[in-house]
Amino acid sequence: MTQISKKMLAAVASVAFAVPALAWDFSASGSSDATFKQTSVAYPTGDGTSSFNTTSSAGGITIKSSNTDGGHSATFSYTADWNGDDGNFDEYVKVSGSKKVGNWTASSSTTQHIQKDVTGADDQAPMTSAGSAVITLTDGSMTYKLGDASHLSTAEKTSNGPMSGYVDAEARVDSFEGFSVGMGVGPGTLTVALDLEAGTSDTAFGDQSIALACGGGSSGFGFNFAGNVGADISVTYATASSTASSRTCTSADNTSDSAAAANTMGLGVSIPVGGMTIAIDFESSHVEATTGGGSITAYTIGSDKTGFEVMVKMGLGDAEAGINISSQTVTPTTDLSGATANNASSTAGTEVWYEVPIGAVTLAAGYGSAAVTTGGNTASGTSDTTTTTTEVGAKMSMSF
Image: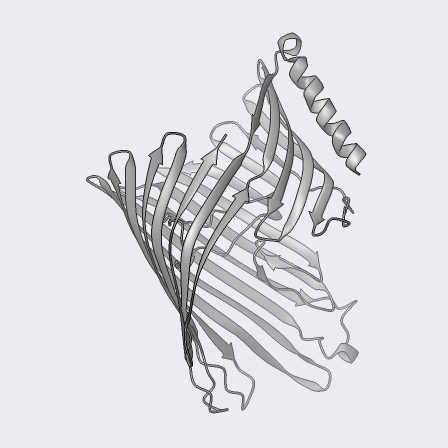
């Protein structure tokens, strides 16, 4: 596998040397950051803790070459990157391109992994199936997308600083295999999307699970409107449901009546006020699953999630200062006779930051606090408990 990586780098280098003859633009990029912070934790009972820590992170490496010839364009890139969210390493090559014929421009890309989801030195995992893709077709007024893409926006307008504390409020949508149509409507763009799936791992628009263990089919509908109506606004609503397969689910599974559903709504609004920007994000999401059939009485369990973020950001010359206040509440629900759901759990967050460029480096200093309340259960006599975590520190970052 190491030999393959070396060969790919050699191929990229060959492209770089051939730039003058082939008229391809060549670039290489990377990034790094380093953070120092003090973290303090106040627990529901007992003494709290406090610690100092310095960490650094080397960002991904990307080598890219691109070419434009009339109405046709193409970009080739090689990327090696650690995915901090999933805790794994990816190494891949990607070619993307667009072609214009008449009034229509079509674009797509293909990505092939040399290594994928690697979690250890000896875990050089290759691809196990073909990569996904999306084909986009537009004439400037209508845009069609079919395949794997972030068809709908999360409808976020707020931002945050370098410390932890804030809680995301957003429409719970992500990349998914589907179809969408975007069109100009008044002062903005309306996008309508469809999500149709079949299997045992269905999700509603790539995020909330509506999976059925014995298999089934799901369908979903969603839309996003984004535009300036005196304020920069984005709103997304999506809903999807799944039903059990009559072929793979039987009464013997006690799941013949199984079903699941989810919906989500996100609203983001940003308003400039003098030298400041005020932004608000709001979320309301719901997910539920019904189990039953055979000898088991059908019952439904689920949860409701609501939250908001309020951000105020102000420019101070080259620098900026901001504050983000957020809250999220997750309320379990059930209609199982005689059952008592847990109390709601919630998180309240605050983050304050100051960011300034110093030459090619960005220096950000901030404070973050998150109070996480875990709901108890009145039937079992347990009480709500709250743990508060605060962070104070600074972060330097650089892209090159």
